[in-house]
Image 1 (spheres, helix red, strand yellow):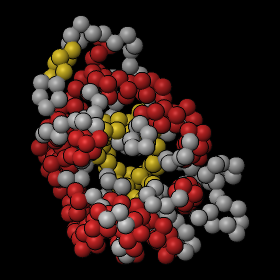
Image 2: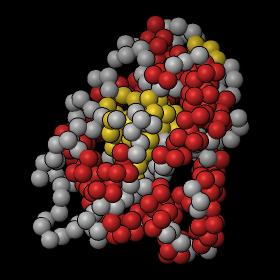
Image 3: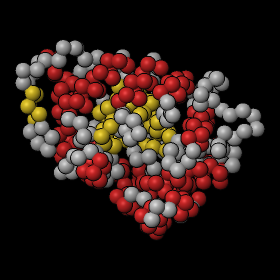
Length: 355
């Protein structure tokens, strides 16, 4: 089972060092996220600091950009990285599209499928001046255009982030890879995700080997497992505040906790949100704990996922905690220790590094 890393940083200089450390530590793919930064630019920064590791957008929003702009960005990054680009796309939720990006939330599954088809057609044929026409929930009618640069590759892997049944089946039908939500569990992957992936594969007549399944595991690794869990409780609370994910928490037996968190969120009570997350909830949805606990939790994905993307907690904790948590993940699961001078290197002796 391969290991990937969502590379957090507080600056582009720190991101370069984190990327170099992850490559040195043997991780397969570095993923960027689109929220506080765009998805493509951090991946480009990491490309300049590495030479072999894959670079994925995990994810960029599929709908605020046109499919052509998405394809152009992917082509540029693939050229910049020497053919190491992985295009991770996601639909986001209704409020993000409508309220944040002024994008209609209409037929999102069909729209994402149409977007992927347009992006692939553009990457494969735009440099040859081929007309590209597709009409659907996402459309293009491209004639009289010839991209002046030959692509590094005429096919770039497209991964889809999916949680719901229809989106997950879509990933099985058309995607080169599936990306999990930041929170998850082996049981949820086994019982809810894999059946829909298989259904999508069957619909398209594809073999299981055609799709790379990337689970996600957020966590902090510390000698004190309880402290590690409490440092991750804020991230669990953040996602539990989103009503769209209530079913996910109910599956794990934490529906009541999620509703309490949503009520606290509505009142602006951040402390109440975090205090509503019991250790058992963190245990079920993350790999936080002692090194032995974290390794055991990660091993439970063997045979279910092809890779696991590791990430540190980023919500309702100081940046120093996120930084030290990322170091703990690289050190615990990397095959080679990061350089001691790194900006994400372990704290000095006697200092936990967690504020």
